[in-house]
Each structure stands twice: as structure tokens, then as C-alpha cells.
Length: 180
Image 1 (tube, helix red, strand yellow):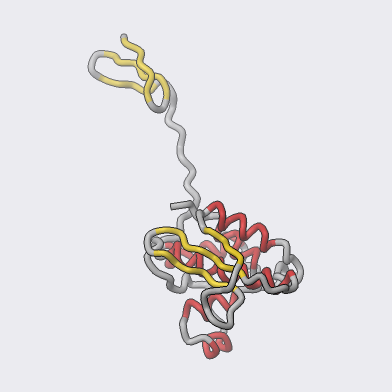
Image 2 (spheres, rainbow, N blue to C red):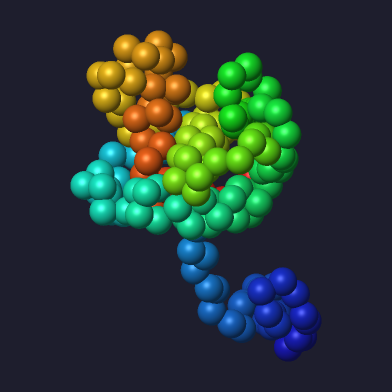
């Protein structure tokens, strides 16, 4: 019998068969939102306990914005402070093809709830980008309220504006993503 170190532990060679001396650990993969993630998102919302009842919004928990930014860093998103890329906006997310994008936040003074809403809005775009495998930005199935749909004809913007005051829900969805 020959004992050799290898990936996954020491392996023993008995004749021509290799046997693993340690049981293989099951990997636990967080749910990834990709092409199919958009189809599974309603199920994920049920699992996370959709907080649409307003129990945790940016007015009651503006500190969640910092946790959202922590998730952005974990996912490889660069966050900058400076003028937003879109005229008249205080924040923007630039989706880059095939890799995580960048968020630019205005240095303009704002209240904590407003800052939370801006960051939550941009993180919804991050979810949209990741759900397309970093190859586009489409709605992910959170839905839009009719007022936002009329104000913002692009469906991904209507979705982001409709849910920008739900930082806990967005944080829970982001925590399920894996860095590409």
C-alpha cells in the first residue's frame, strides 16, 4: 500500500484503485442569481420573508446602507465618491460586461435615510446585473408599483425605485450572491 498526500486529504493506493481516506465534505453554495435566478426570485423572497410590510425601511434602519456597501465590497464592486455619471442623479451604478461594476455616490450632504435609499437603489441594479451573469441589467422579478412604472419607463429603473426603501430585503438577497 502506498500513501500519498493529495487534494482532499491523504489517499491510499491499493492495487490500481484510489480510495479517499477522508469523507468528502459537501460544499454549501449560496444561491446564485443568474439567468435562472430571475425565475426563482419569487421563491427566494418567500424564504427571506419579504419585508414589504415596512418593518425595516431606510427611515427606521438607515445604518443598513453601510452593510449594503460591505456586500458591494465583498462582491468586487468598487464604490467611489464623486459626481454621478447620470445628470441630475446623486448615485449611479455602471454595469461592466463580464465583471462587477462600479457605484458612484455624490458627495452632496444628505440625510441618513436618503443615503440609505440611494445605496439600496444602486444595489438593486447590482442584483439585476448579477442575475444576468454580469452580461446585462434586467428586472429580477421584485415587481414595480404602477406609479413608478409610469414615472420610469425602463422596467429595471421602475423596479429599483419601487424597492429602494427596502434595504433589509435587498441585503438578504445580496448575501446569497457569490463573487464571480
